[in-house]
Length: 168
Image (cartoon, rainbow, N blue to C red):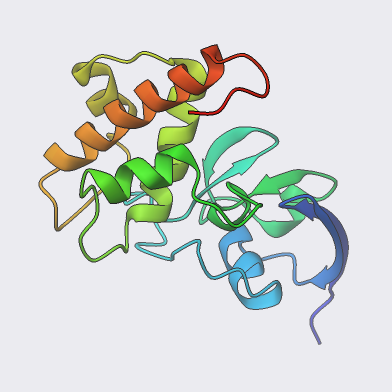
């Protein structure tokens, strides 16, 4: 008999109450219990970064966090990055600059990029590479990912400087 523990987690703005086994990883809770499959399971050892989500506003590898550790916390997944159904500027930049191929690493890359640009809105190429070093892509060679991050930074900076209500 396995004892379960009650948790309350706000994911992408919606509160969930669930019973989980204490050993359940946050990535498995998101995918298996909440059916939010945008967060990918890559290595289960925190090496690849495919499972990055934001926990209380900070990027974490959800394969290293237990669901019970997220009790009373706020989690944002790739599905919650642009809740209005439109692409977030980072997602759009990855699309426009071909920063993805197979797409497996893309959710983690985008969530890591979001954290990077939150902390450094105008990163240099070297700072982008350093900021994403915990994410592994086996398809792209990273050049287009770096270009996508640069494009996203530019777009987000432009949007932030526009007066409220101004359109592009």
